[in-house]
Amino acid sequence: MSEFRTHPDPSQWDDYVDFESTSWPKKDRRHYWIIPSICFNCESACGILAYVDKQQLTVRKVEGNPVHPGSRGRTCAKGVVTPIGPLVAPAGTVAAIWMSELTVKAARFNDATGAYGAFTFYRQPTMGTERIGTKAASANQRILFFRDNVLVDANFDRLTEMSAAELRELAGMLPAAKPSAANLPSLPGYLPKSDAVENSAKYILGPQALVAQKGPLTPEQIDFSHDPEILIQDYSSKSGPLTLTLIQYPTPQIAGDRLRAFQNAAQSTPNSLLVRRSGPLVDVVTGAVGSSEAHALLNSVNYEAEVTWNEATSMSKRDNIGNLIVALFALIGIILLISLIFGIFFGGIRILLKRLFPDRVFDRPEDVEIIQLHLR
Image 1 (spheres, one colour):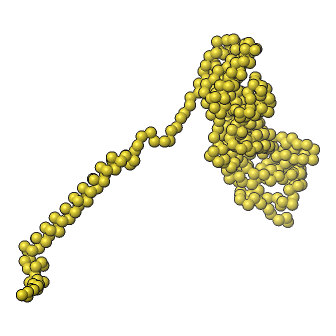
Image 2 (spheres, rainbow, N blue to C red):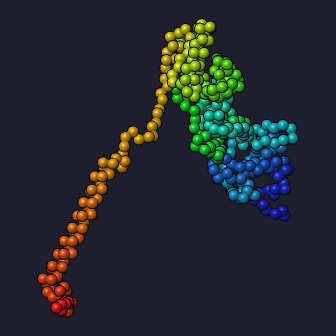
């Protein structure tokens, strides 16, 4: 008689033989691969075993893994009804279809502006918005997101209800950047929202990225020697597509110099672009620039400077010499008043004791001495 076991011995997992239950009372033997995996239906991550029919390449049943250190062969009702289906794999290999295969590519930048620029570079207009990390977008089995200064490009072989949850957990595990390196660029806040083409914004920091994006302006026109920040956004209009390019220079003076260069370029090639300066921003509209919508789009960009002054504009009460003198006299008056109160208190007690206990506490005869000087 063979030994009774709740689960097949791990030494049999490569070729486990069992009877086919649907052929009873015939004793048809089936050969299985037993593949260990993990259940992702909840955060417990219990160990499971999948019985893969070698002939049909299908998962016939799922049960708990007895050698898993956590679950030890136990699993709930959700674990044993994990969705199964045909197993498609190259010859000589087996792939468990209930597990999503995930390919992750990650890049770390100096700060969040670099990660945001790469995110806008790889993001496609057809992608939808996701709530993962700082910003995220998805299309089919691909999910692109970044958190602080780390960009992650994830590709699943298939999406499940747990795919987004797994990536949120992954985003939470990414190392947080320093506060100074986690700040996003301010340029997207100046973009008009009306008629903007979804997911068309491209944030650019260098000439190579500008050429790769095939932007409407050349690196020579922008002049990257001043380290500008660039944001390109497409817009739709009745007269045709429009492209708004925001260029932020370090100072308004530099922006004014570049404005004159753009104006000269516009005069040499009429109806090629519209240009306007707002603070350190140079706004350029290309496309159907002859329409009123192009002029309205150009005028809708307004730079609002926020100035914070941390120096005192007036003397405080503590620094005012007049208030200091008044406070000094007030302190003297308080000290004199306290001295008067204590003097009256102790004097009154002395008088009261002399009346209640005459010659007993104060001025007792034995305490009185008369000094006589016999001078002749």
